[in-house]
Length: 241
Image (cartoon, rainbow, N blue to C red; front, side, top):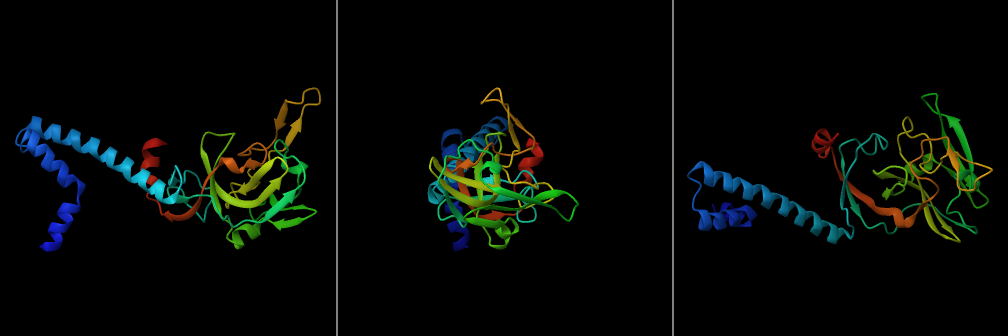
């Protein structure tokens, strides 16, 4: 009984009920009941926003939770999973230094890219290399490289993918990423297959459905995954898709 009383006073709606009873009295008729429900709905939104903001402050990110909206990270993350995000610090990812400006360079201008046929008979990226790096893409999952959330410049949706390599270049720091699902995400996110128009330095053609044009600046990283809540976001996807 004592425990029940403790939970009663811990429930924030208890204080809303006491406030509404003082102003409108007990909900004895339809009008008062309707007023109560309007306040309940408004209070729920305010409470959810406050909880979300507090979690963001604790985890040091503006977006502490994100819903997985595709199968690009299967089996690591499934559609409908809610990813818990913290500040993108201490990423577990190989670091390479490149003494060049790479802001608007396609990957083939920075790395040697090797492709192979996967178990589905489709071409996929096998490895990337430079003079200082030779990296098999499968090692990113094996070594549990950090999964990050970043803002794409080719789609309005934020991308939740695995970090492949972190680049320190003359003109900034960049991240290269890829989805774990080799059937749907066979190429690195930033591998666009860019072909430049000889007559125009600004006109380019993209032959692959990439998720970020050029290497992704670290400023575009929203955070890194520290956990997940399986499938709980599916309810929202049903109503928004």
